[in-house]
Image (tube, rainbow, N blue to C red; front, side):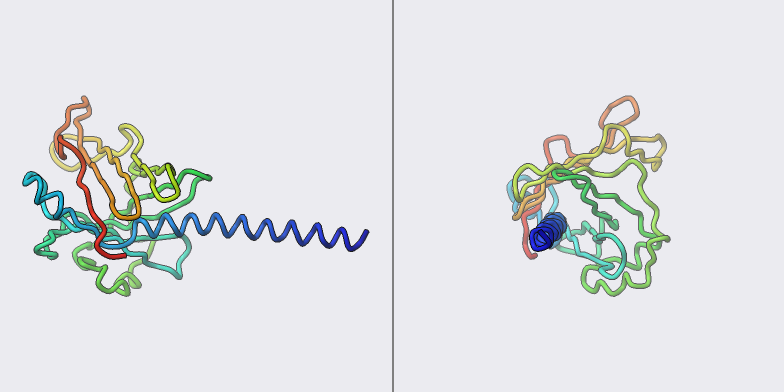
Length: 207
């Protein structure tokens, strides 16, 4: 009886460890899909209305709680021309859903091209970041390596400019590319910025 009890305990512990490992593995796999260097140059060659843009994501703060990425969009021909800088916190919501929370970086020019040397972020504290309220993107797992994500309707409000707007983001992430479609709308629902014809398509260059 005692041997049977010990056996059942061992099996339970083993299953528990495997479950935690699988959850961790899925999160790491999702982060790896967001990490690397991607380019829209192939799309720009086919359609001149799109620019040659590099999308870069690098994991940072591995010794701090949570999972964090630095993301940057810059001109492919001139990396000093930067369109976007954010720090992203990634979480696993449930078995098929992941979320990314976006944070504004204080004194962001200091961290321009920070993907070249991520040690620059060691001096930046999590508490100094400002979260973009309502701008979380929720990704649903479609296949083992494809995730589709979007913001919640009218939750991501931008107060920049003369009038407030709300921003929508739609993304599809896979092993070899990321498609991203960001658009801004007036509070009456009229599109005021962003591409009309479709998303930017970034092809993976490096892991």
